[in-house]
Image (cartoon, rainbow, N blue to C red):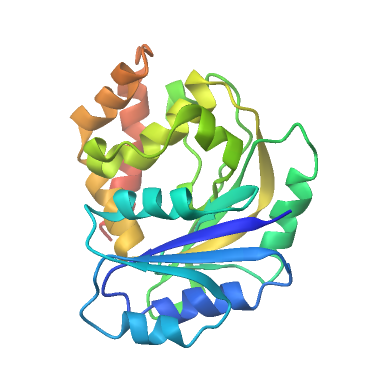
Length: 248
């Protein structure tokens, strides 16, 4: 089973080395790592060039991080696709092997796990742990969502439901998971362990803060999928709590 990993970069020189190294050190052999760079002006591409495990580098102007992710998914040839942001790292060198074992079950089409927020300058200092928990059909109505960096999907799911809707800007990851899990009812397996470390204050958490402000975009995510956001106010409450945490 080939697993494709997509990393979108833009002026990521301060963190990209850790991201690339954690993939290079994975104990799973059949990995296709694709880096999609938006035209960095710093040393990002020079650092990328120093990692021979990378299968493909796409470097061109894009319309933002989700456009870059879409390019990476379109270029991927793996059976399973995951996304690792340029300031995130895998928690251990066995993460991809763990994901592969989950997908060995032919009924599994999506997998997600837990995530830790860590200090930007110290990946070992945990600030908060995001325990995703098991999914059921009503989870989204009560404020649940899986941590997107932990979300791995079989490529046939993207073939069926499509890619990120870039018009939703910072809500694009939320809308895609809503579309996959709730609208299309793709079965997902929860791995009860931390597999991602996300730096607080980086690109990833900044995008989360921006999405918390995008109330209208979140509502639109439900509307365009013909879903009834009856419990949307309940959904917003835990997001506001997460937003307060991210501002610390």
